[in-house]
Structure formats: structure tokens, C-alpha cells
Image 1: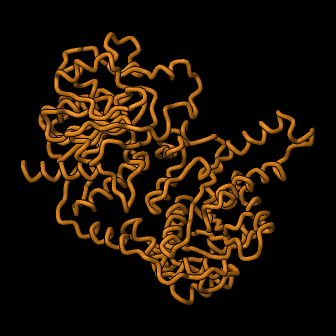
Image 2: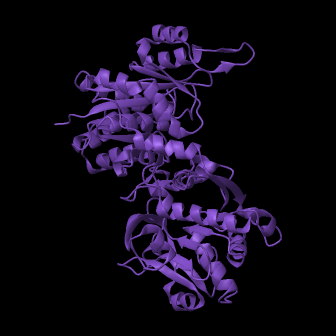
Image 3: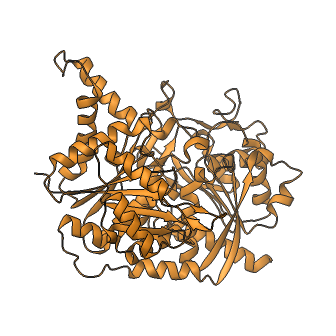
Length: 539
């Protein structure tokens, strides 16, 4: 029997208010009180998953251990909770409709007319309860993407209405995140947008139990009373979410506002004493009181939208705190990098990360940046395509294979040092068909990678179609670029590094997807330390 309690988080007034951060913060507080908690995201777009979405439109595509391509909010969930998510934690309208249509095609509905209500809403409710039925979690937090009033979100809100009616009393709570705008002309906060948003939610049959109000200025007792009166919630359930210095401050702000207590009271669950947040507070103390600072360049092709590299940026925050060092990230657009301006754009940096990506745009800029980094002994970290560019650069300028390239960019190259994986060559569909999810890697002792991890056997998450071409392996090894990490099952090169460079490491996988507040990724920690060492030596 499903005994889980359900929190539904909806948004109003405007998008990008931070439902994911509020959900993750509440989950962290409940977890710190001893409850088993998970979070799931329901997205209203018709794409089956974010894997085919442009990073400019959607930010990064997050990948789980089981190979799901998901919304970037799942990264926040994992970074806050230190617990892996899975395929079940992210559902889109596309996936819902695909399941219902597949059932209709098989004849499961026995000729009935298939409709949004009940068929689509039934499938949404089934998905909402999957994690609860696993028996692993006492509390499931469900974030509904989009904003109340969006046409796309209506089936999800209707599913929430039905599910609240079906669940036992005290087993569901609706948190509505909304905006309290500040008008500079009159120097006052305005509650009317929130009132309208709650009214719109109520018109769908869903009453908010808790209001979380995003604001630039504190909300006084009088305003809380007004919001409670007009929005039909208790005054203690009007929660202020004021702008903060870092997203990692939000759990402590929500603790101060007693959001976790309000939710547990509505569930009729015990508080279990005060939440244990010692590790979290220690992390924040190191983050806010750094003893050093380094500047690291992030070379990529989507730098206009930092969310395209969200997990990398957060990994630098975790690794910086671990080193008691502030990491200042400087974005460098690879499309505008060339031999003439590489010195100007890179020379002042303490380290350079060449980011993942797809396609030929900006590739030569990445390769030129890596040449300068390699020759000038600047700490280097390449991820996925960044690692592949390091291989191409080395092949061209050290092995003297002038036309060396990846067949992703040039399928006519005579020296395909990066080539498509054999099992990918017959695949024509784009969605969910890459090498996705966690794969094993064995690290060679005595290497930079081994000194970072401290062990030989690791597992990391992947998202790629192309790989290092092992036909060239001996040439690379004899010239000083070694494969320090290999997949034991396939022999695929997972990590490359230079033997005659202070810190030059490239990885085929995505280490940024496993970095959390409590467990900063060792490769990021070691890279930041290398940047600190370089700065102390040359600056």
C-alpha cells in the first residue's frame, strides 16, 4: 500500500521564480529531520525528454545513472539531497501522451474515446505515485513545471486536484510559489498579482495550503495577514523567500521561516527535533569565507546562457568551498577564439575548462585554446567534447597529423582520431539514443586521475556518440598523451592526460553531474587545487 505523503509545488505570476530550489530546500530540511524524501519534476512541454532541446532554450540536459535525459532541476535535487535521481523523477507531457497513445494503439482502452480526462490525467496520476509505491520514500515532492494559467499545465493541475481527492486526509500539501513585486515609483510591495494567481489556481479546483512569496524586500506581519486573508491560507503558511547571496542559503532561510514545520504539521507528522544541518552550514562558511581566489576560463559555445553549463558552475562552487577558494568563472565564446587573440583571452587565467557540446561551430576556437594551454603549461580540464578537442589538438600539433579531426565535424578526414562508436552508426533517431548513463572506468595507478579519485574503480555518467579511436592509441601513448582511464568492458578511453604537464586531464564522461554539496567531485577539487598552485607559482 502507498503510504507516502505528497507535496505539490506550483508556480504563479511568472516563470523562473525558483520552484526547483524551493522544492530542493524543503526536501533538504525534511531529510535533515530524518525523513526519506525524493523530488520529481513534471514538465509541460511535448518533447519526450530534454535530450533533443537546444541548450539556448532549456539550459543543460541533466543525465541520471540509469540514462535518463532530464530537466536541469534534477541536478539541484541531487546536489541538495546527495541522493541519485532516476528516470522516474522527470516526466514530460510528451512521455505521458506517448504512453497513452501506445496503449490506444494496442487496444488497451477497448475502443473507448481517449480523452485528456480521464486518460491523460490517469497516466499523470500513475506517474506521480510511482516513487511512492516503491516504498523507499516517506515524502514525495512533485514540482509542476510552468505557471498556473498556462494551457500546457492544465492537465497536471487537474491531476493534482483528482489525486488530492483520492488520497487520505493529511496526505497531500500544495505549495504555491509566487511573486510579490516591488514598485520603485511608490516604494511598496504589491500583493495583487499573488491574489490573482491563487484565485486562478482555485478556479481549477486546487486550494494552496502554503504560499511561498519571492520578494526583493522583507514582507511585514501586516502583509502576511493580508495575504493569508485573501488567499485563504493560515498566516504561518505565508512564507517569505527573499533574494539571497547564493542558492545554498535558501534551505537555511526556509528553516528560519519554518516551512518544514508548516508542512509536517499539515501532514500530522512529528518534527523529530531540530534538523541536522552541520555539514551544510560548514560548507556555507567555507564558501563565504574563502582564503584564496582563482580565475578559471570556461571555453564553450553556449556561454550566452550560463544555465547551459549549470552543473559545471555548481561543481566549481563545491570544489572551491572544499579548497577554501573562491572560483571566479570567466566565460569565453569558442566561436570567437583564434590564434591571434588566444594569448589575450587566456594568458591571465589560472586554469581553463573546455566544455561539452555538439556540432562543428566553435570547434577550431576550442582547439586553438587547448594548443596555447598545453604549450604554456596552464592547468587544463576537458569534458566530453573538450576532451575530444584535446585529442585532436595533440594529433595535429604533436603527432603532426595535420588533418586529424572528429568524424562528427569532418567525415572525410583521413585521420579520424575521434570516431563514432560502432553501435551508433546504424542509429537514425536522435532522442535518447546516445551512450547514456553510468558506466564503469578503471584508472591507472600513478596518474593524475588516480591521485584525484584515490581508487582504481569508478563509475561516471556519459552522454555522447563519438569516442577516442583506439587505432591511434599507441601513437598517443608514445608521444606523452596516456589513457589513464579505460572502460573495462569495451576498452573505450575514458580519461586522457599528459605526462609532461602539471595538470592536463580530459574525460569522456560528465563528472559535473555527480558533484554535490556533501561530496564535491574529486576531479573538480583537484583541478581547482591545480589552478591555485599555478597562480601561486606564476602570478
